[in-house]
Length: 413
Image 1 (cartoon, rainbow, N blue to C red):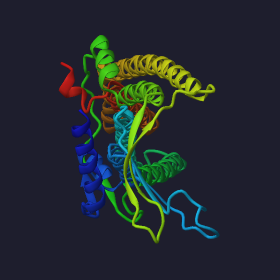
Image 2: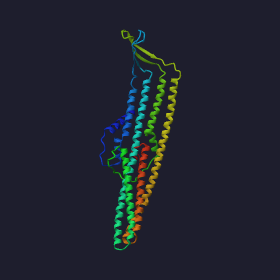
Image 3: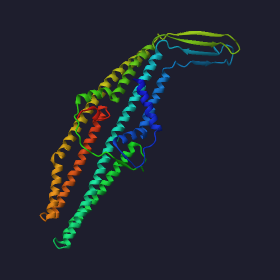
């Protein structure tokens, strides 16, 4: 378990440091955006580096304790020191080395899972900002189409004015609508620029890099199995795995504190004086039987910390279940809104605009009615885009909460 986790961490760090940047002026799919962020976002590289640092600490903890070297040359008299040179090598036969290694290994596992948590948080942010950008792009296109339509209508109105069918003052209405449409396009373009900047930032791309989303917003409802998603999240979410590792580390700390009371052996190499050849090797026995309370306090501290970590694990699992429930509820609400538009609102708005246009061409309706119908259709399309974006972001939140990469791979339609 630990080996695979650390291998993945090392691979992630290598990708973050060595992989080339994504091509400039790119049209990105959602997967492209996620992979680019995994390569280029500095926070991911920092998390991977921290995990590797913890792994190095675990390697050091598994080594035998370093020897102590005491050098004490006599300054005044021949009896200033019992030994001129004393080298002591603890053997740690009481299990302290094993306990220390276990603590460090679990701490390294916790750090690796924390890096995974950060990685998944960034993936969620990429997905949500990607869909914000896709929505903004489609909104700009919608406003451009609206302006093109209004310009065509304005030309038709002016032709009618020229032949005397309608008074010239009525052209003011189309001019006002065109001015409003251009303002809406400017606002939509600002929203697109802002969304692209946010997406570039989380992907770790240069601020000058042009980004276009290739995946368009679309609605395809997913059937979500709440019990399955919650059970899976409580098993595999990195927050849960990190808490499990912290609990294991605390349990190992209890053993380490208890082993501190056990006898231990050490090898000693002694030379009595610089001028004498007398010296030798001895085996020292450490007997830590006398305890004025510090060892007992450390054991009790470790036991209480273990209890706290166990309760913390349950709290994390409860939080994970709550996050899954909230994400599913949000996705279901967003799906209901999107279905409502697909079930008739969007189609009826388009029919209304088409009928108004045909009536105007036949002289049965005024251009004012055409403008009103077109404004209604545009408003419905804007709301529909917002509903699609809300659903896409809600599904991304479900994937994050459930600890899976894609709903499509885990759930049936």
